[in-house]
Image (cartoon, rainbow, N blue to C red; front, top):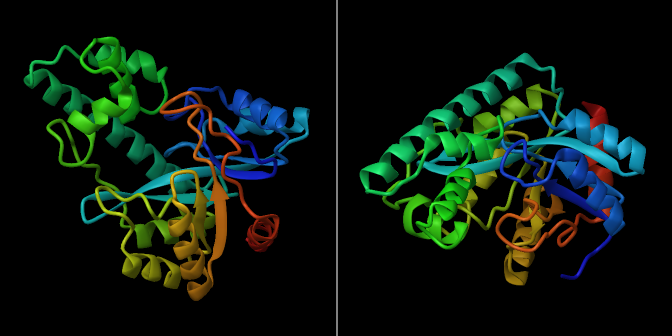
Length: 281
């Protein structure tokens, strides 16, 4: 895969649904020549201390972040927070609530799978999660191990995705409320992968407009799964709404596809603008 040295503002570790330890994410970023990498695990900041220490050792700037789960019309919307105050009590309370929700959701998904006659063990799902967030890719991995499906993608397509037999909806903040939470925690707020929203082609633009009006500062334009046409569309939308166009690979380690770290990056001028906002608090 072609690698572009620079700034990758979207990566996951095994503290959520990635496969690498936080320090390994940073080490691989260094090997690729990336100057900056953001660790943005789903609904947890647990890996940030390890990643920051690795960055200091390896000469890679690590942007502390989190990918916060929100929900609109019963469909997930992901909101990136960069440089939040990780000691903020309101933010950590919501992250803890979301993790508890993910645990219970995992139990319910496994119950549905077992009702379908599929031999999935929740104990194995917990083992795969390694004490971290339980997310659907962990269940998909357990299904592959059990011989139910050949790939994790097949598990989603047949059972786990929205509207499929074992789907269980999440209960999360409205995206506009998520913007407010991130801003109150001193973070810089960016909508993740607007071209990926349930079975639709895009997060509704009226929602993006309302999030921008609420203070959201950026839009993830350059994402590995966005087509060139989508990237151009979202670049124009970001310009119209006064949002900073950001970029990131959404790397999950070896999950889903070849390691994509560095495959989509953020323009240095856009990153400078984000960092300036973070400095303003």
